[in-house]
Length: 413
Ligand code: GLN
Image (cartoon, rainbow, N blue to C red):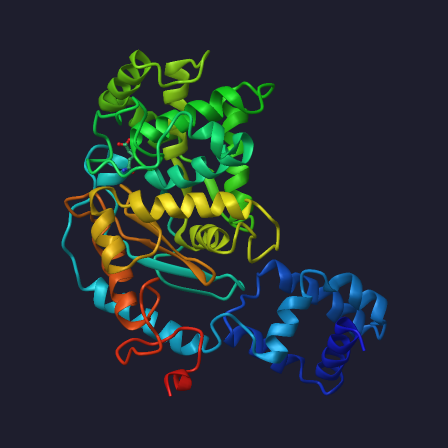
């Protein structure tokens, strides 16, 4: 019997025994949300079943995005099998971090300084199992979290060879907006302002040359982000953009400094490229949507909700490598030591954490530490890693202090 036929029989038996509700509950217990695009297919199947028209052909037609999900539910094969216990841990850590009220909002624009004491954590596994707690539907500007995505999109259009003719791969060991280039007169990496301004200039000047206008280019980049988020919320916050541009003396200075050093591609219009950079920083999303983007990066570029291939696996590897070494400004080394996973922060208080081949997490809390990273965002990641052995150099076989997230606890025996 083919796999699909077997699943059809399983599903039919759910229907005929009147246990469809049980199926829905099983799916939900595993963290699959009702609005998951894969679940929409079920509605068609259900309708046909009600009308007694559900034959194998109809079923097979709806199955494409659904089959792996169905298989996982019936065979309990999700990447995090004990999802309930994992989310319980997340909840405990959330409340522990919520009590930490240290840090200060970014003060340079009112759009950031006047934000209340929000705190939200969302996660999405590479199978699309989701969990959110706190203020995860509040929109925020992604700020520096645009950097790994702009870099990813530049890699897709231009290849790594071309992109790295303009920007390096080394941590700078300096603040994110420091006026410094490496010994080849290139920005150190794409995760700091100098590098991200150059990446913005590549996107603005070298790709899709026939869609010249700023709006068209911005919409193009936004649509990449939306697709990586399974088509969840993204928007451009015009007021943040205008405020960013108004206060951007240092970024302008960086731009002129780099133009003098001939860092930009030929024909780049500096002021337009800087505007484009400010726009990219002002793109808005929510913790829920951004956790899906992080999960797409963790999943080799395939969006776990839509199964759409957004980025190549090589692009993801490049992006995650630089997030690992340079994603958290001047705290990147210590974070790599404590957590060992790729992450990126933004001055709005967002921290995006990817756990390759497992899940993406997005924390949002606007109070920042002295490095410009969200206090609670960093604390959350560090606490999570105290419980689960997800650091690449953790050893499971001989560890007695940390749990494995996706192998039974008896794995140690
Ligand atoms: N808007 C910020 C800046 O250019 C972006 C940097 C960040 O999030 N760290 O200063």
